[in-house]
Amino acid sequence: MKLPGFLNPAEHIPNRQFAGRIGLIALVLTVSTSLVHCWMNSFGLLMAIKMNAIHLGTMMAITFLYYPATARSPREVPSVVDWLLAALSLAGTAYVLLAYDRLLASHLNTITLDRVMAVMTMALLLEASRRAVGIPLTLLSILFVAYTRFGPYFPGLFAHKGFTWQRIIVRMALTDEGIYGVSLMVSSTYVFMFILFGSFLAATKTSDFFNDFSLALAGRYRGGPAKVAVIASALMGSISGSAQANVATTGAITIPLMKRVGYAPFFAGAVEATASTGGILMPPIMGAAAFIMSTFLGMPYFKIMLAGVTPAILYYMAVMIMVDLRAKKRGLTGVPASELPPLGKTMKERGHMLLPLALIIYFLMAGYTPLFSAFLGLISIIVLSSLRRSTRMTLRDFIRALDDGAKNAAPVAIACAVVGFIVGAVSMTGVGQIVALNIIMFSGGKLWLALILCMFAALVLGMGLPATACYIITATIAAPALQQMGVPPLAAHFFAFYYGTMSAVVPPVALTSYTAAGLAGAKPMKVAVTGFGLALSGLLLPYLFVYNPVLLMENFHLGSYAFVVIMAAFGIFSLSAGLIGMLKTEMPTWERTLFVVIGISMVTPLRYYKLISLALMTGLVAFHYLRHRRTPATA
Image (cartoon, rainbow, N blue to C red; front, top):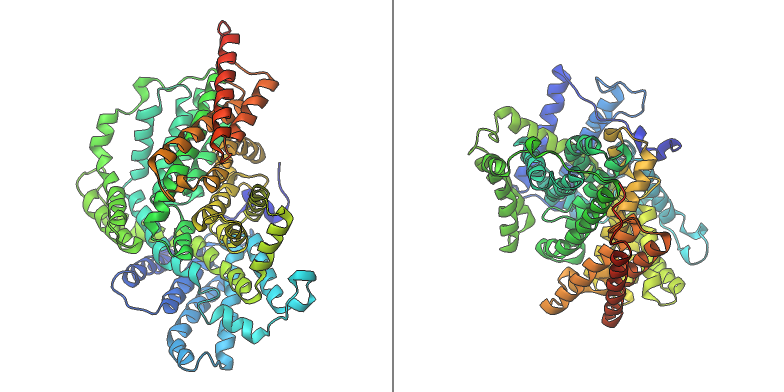
């Protein structure tokens, strides 16, 4: 199925690849950008807004060079307009560096040139967003700016007095409350450094190690390649923080393997898409949104990372159960042992490249900042990779890692910057409080209904938006409503973060599924629908940690934590069995329905309801096995 217009992710224009003199100029820009960011985030002492200006200017320049304006734009070379826009992006950065001290001393008493340069930067950002992020977020940002200006013309509660263009321009592009705000600050520091960390790991072929390790661990079991995809995606996701990059890295190996043992192409793509999306939930590197959440909540990143451990494990357990039952239903086998890499040899040759991840976790646990931890992680990669010939970095590898780091950071940075329009508009107009009030009013004060409304808001916003942008918008608008209803701040923000992430596998705009479909050679919409089905068990998890914050290590008590985790595991098992329709043998519809209902009922915060549901599930499983004890599994 082909979606119309800009809603078809399959039609996204690929990045350019340059050669010759143009390639050298572009390489100098990207490598210099990475080196400047390393300097700014280690030894450089710059005002935050100046750092953000450098970050935004360089990221926009890279975007204009590497992302063509239209499908008809040249692929081999940037156009004259692209060069001009890139130069203007850097000029906007230079202007902020030179003029901001005067603006600060004059209490933002602007002159005409200040406003002209600010408008130019805003226009450039919107165009960069259109190219690198997509039209939906760009249009949404424009809508919020229009809402800020034309407030009196909006109906009912959404009406406000409106603001002058001059005030909007100053707020949005000359202060740290608009495009140079918190989200861009996080992008210029934590996010960039961790993306660079992932690029250096990729240069040492750590992704190959993750694939080989996963194959050696799970490849021989029933439906082994699908389980390999789940494990490899979890490992790769822990360092990449990007679902699309995860699919491209692990899917190139796991999807052909799944097809070879008998999985249909659409199902192979769906498994990879679902597993890769969960990589954003996997600590220690959980994507840009997790770092922004840390800043929004004023919590150490280590606490965010710790809170993410249990939900990530439960999510991957849900996907693993689904693929295992599917393999049993289809009678699929694993990969022959003779074709699997030896686990011992794999660990001996490349296992030492797990140490940088372990070091980052140690530094975060020891109380160091994510920025310092990422910087030390980079140093450790360079040192540790030299211990084995198979991982040793050459000068070419080093330069490629710096180049890839800057290019991979560009779309994230642009998304974080353009969301600043929305955050600035919300803070100026107070529309977030209005939305929160409406959510509470429509839900009638019932938390479960408010959660459903917030879930749909996040999933709808996520259609076509990056997970980071979706989280910021949902956290700004919907999370306050949940907090007013008694949900702890961490749980409310995790709820927004989780569903912002899951929007990548929700049809019709399931970006991760479209990427996987290309690798699998399957119809994108079929991959998207199947991937959504595989993720359904995991989609209930946010309700669990809202009603049981102990899953996020809030008010931690070992007994309560163990009980909730065990009940969650049984609930996931029941829901997965019902959705796949398989246990010992295939289930009739009524039996599947009962398993699904019992699995959903495990979400309740009431202990005795959980125990009743567990008893019902135990009885149903026993009945199923007794009824089918002589019936062979359907192949």
